[in-house]
Structures are given as C-alpha cells and as structure tokens.
Length: 597
Image: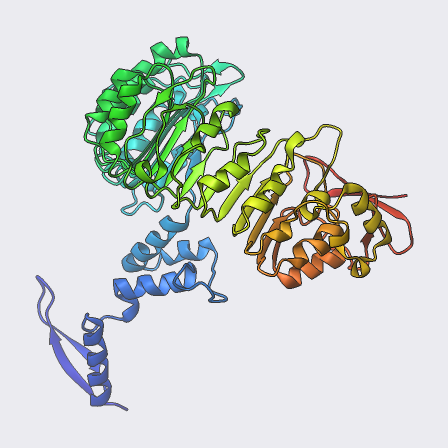
C-alpha cells in the first residue's frame, strides 16, 4: 500500500486542518506537472480549460468546416443542453455552441393570419421565469410575431427587453393590423442592447388591412431600440403597403426616426419603403459606411439626391439593390464610381449612360430577374466597353425580347453562371445561350407556366424536333441513333465546360424523359452536379445519372421504383406486366396516389 503522509492546509478564516493525501510516484507527479504546465494551467484537468473544452465540444457536438468528414460526431441538441449542467466551465462552453447552432426562438405567429393568439402569452411567461435567474442565457436570437403585440402582453414585452435584451444578438419584430400594443419613449427606460447585431421591423399587409401606426406607436419602439443598439450591424425595415398617399403620413414618421437614429455602426441597411429627398439626405449626412444597401426607388426621390447618397457610400458599398414597387414611376439614376461593388440588383429605373469598367470595375453579379420594364433593359447591355469582371447574370424573368442573351454575351464575355427564365413564346432563348455562352460553368433554368399545355424540354436541350424526339423515344433504340443526323438546332452539349445544371419545374408541366438523359446529360463530360425533378425519366437512367454525377432530385417520390420500369412515348410509366401505372401527386400532403388500370 502506498505511503500516506500528512499535509497541513488552511482555509480562509479557519484553523489549520490536517488531511490525508495519497502519495504519488515521483515520475507520475513530474509528468503530470509537465503536462499541466504545457496546458498553461497548473494542476487543472484539461477538460476544465476553456479553449481545450471548446475545441473538444466543437469536435464532438457540432461538426463544422474544421471537421467536415468526421463520422459519428453529430450528437443531438439535447446532449449539448445536458453538458451545460455539469459545471460552470462546461456551461459556458456548451452555451456558446448551443447559441451558434440554435435557430431563433419564436413567440407569436409570423405568417398571417395571426388570429390564433390574441391573449396573454404563457410561453413567453414560462420562458422569462427561467431566464430571469440565468447568468448565461442560452438564446440570443428571437422572432416575435404580430399577434404577440397585444395589450395583454404589455408587461411581458417590457420584461423580455429587460431580461433578454442585454444578451440578444438578433431581434425580428413583425406587426400587422391585429397588433394593439402601445409604446411610448418611456416604455423601456435604460434599455441596453450591447450585443445586438441584427434588427428587423416588418409591417405586414394582410388581406388589404394595413399595418397602422395610428393604433399602436411602433415608431417609438423603433426609436428606442435603435438608440439602445450601439453596435448594430444590420438593420431591415419592411413596409408592405404600396399606397403612397396613405404612406405619406405613416412612413414619414418611420423614415424620420430611422434616418436620424440609425447607429453609425450599421453596415447592412435594407429599407423596403418609400423615402423622400429629406430622408435620403439625412441618411447621407449620418456618416454611415455601408457594405450593403437596399431601398425602394420612387418618384419622391430626386436624381441628385440619389447620386449624393451613392457618392458617400461609393468606397465601401459591396451590394446594391434598387427596388421598384411602382412600375409606372420611372426614376432617373446616375451612378458614381463604385470601387468595391460586387453585386447589384435592379428592378427598373431610367439609368444614365455609364461604362461598366469605369463605374463598376469589380462588379461580379448583375441581377435583373425582377426588372419591370423590358423595353429599357437593353440600355444596360448597349455599352461601348465590355465588363470583364462580371461572372454571374440573372436575366429578366419571363422575358420575351429576342437577342437579349446574345447582347449580354457580347457585353459580359467572362460570364460563368447564368440564371434564365424565358417566356413560353421565346423558349429558344435557352438555345441562344448554348450558342453565345459556350464557356459557362453553371446554368439555372426556370421554365414558364403553361396553362393546359406542356413544354417539351427534350427538344430544347437536344436541338431535335419534338416529332423526332417522340419517334426515337417510342422505339427506345438509343444506341443505334446518331442524334446529329436529326439535330436541327443548338443543344446543351455545346456547353463543354458546364459543371452544374439546375432545372426548376415549380411552375410548368415539363416533358423531360430518358431522351434528355441519354442524348444530353450523359454526353456532357464535365457535368458534375444535376438538380432536377425526375419528371418522366425511368429508374434505369436515374441510376445511370447517379453513377455519373451528383444527382439531386427535388422530388424523390419515385426512388422505390425498380430499375426495370420504363417510359413510353407518351410519358406514362409502365411496369413489366404491361399495365399502365398512373402517378398522381396528392396536393397538400406528403404522399402520392397510385392507380393501376
């Protein structure tokens, strides 16, 4: 038995006491001391040292980019919660992990209708009863729906801001006509939001009933919260109503407060509301250095005022989005030089002539998907100098103007990613991309909605007529067919460098069968990723595509079918007995209904 020796210890305000200490071998003691010294904390277990504990927890509980391929490392969120109960150090380390991975806590309903809750919120009360005694609140992100803001929850709102406000990093507030809570400048005395980084105010419009500041004083809440969030980095204000005469009274109050009280620390500012000259001038004089800016460009704002604001942000702005909620109002915009701008989205305006290399020397993404006036979009493409920096373009949704893709290819010679959604009468625009954009690496296609009609995508992708597609598909003798003999138009196989193809079928009935799989997708050597629905492809070709590339089916409802199933020329699935199997999606539920005739 190892020797026992006495050691005298004294505690604060106590007499010396004698305790028995088990003697350790000298080698063991020296090794443990050396290990403790190397850890930087003498005599402390490694799992009680902060940075070691955080690394271990991150490895075990929350795989991220540091450990992307570690199998068996994911543990449920409940295990993270349980780890918080071990000791103070474990509580702190697990709470950091819990905060990072947890989605925002929600009180009330965000999506309309909000009538399900108009009384005292017991969930919020229970939450606050626990959090008010916690020294380390595990939740930092909150979403509060419109029907929480009723008079019965007035005290709960004050308690929430007092208890959770100091540790909150994100707040999202949603209001609509059901909200009746009153606010004043004295509602939250001494409010401090030292950690708040992201703030959203949303005033909704449900069934024509507007968010009204007449019944509850939201502007006061906006003013108080903006004044307390000294380190705010992102601010979003969304005001849904589009009646300018009605907004002229209501929005003026919001805009005046926002333009005067917004902290200089804000880097991302998104204002989905109408501003006037005074509001934008005040914002320009606040000293903001924005990295992202979004606003609704309306006739109430003059050309010179817009240019002045842009000039103040020209050295720092990286993302710019100009909304246009009123297509009948054409606003003139004169761009200064943006040294750092990388992404720009335009929804419609009268753009003064400019040169991409001189005005946007580093622009990488141009989004015109919501451009309102198709006749004016060509003014962005009829330029004297080419934009060599641009890598990604979103074409206007459902555009019908011939030659638009060709003009874009001439203006932006280095495009690598294309998003296209042509109208039904000019689906050939997709084939235009096959000719003039041969070097693109990513293609995102959204097909148009056709009422009581179908769009033959086989023909578009292959360049073969619809009649020949049906004839070849009927005989199903693909290997003996030289598709070039019947190919009359450009095909997707012209895109030799294409690596990613995404087909969105959310708004159309599409004919895409084994013909496209065999003569298009399987022939593309560099294609690495395909995202699509199965449409009318057989399991045989689904399996072949999965073996060739990373295939992601957006609706994998047919994954249980055997590889023997086939598709005839009309597109119906047939089993080996010859009986026709009709697949009918049962809308609104997560299953299909099968009928065998």
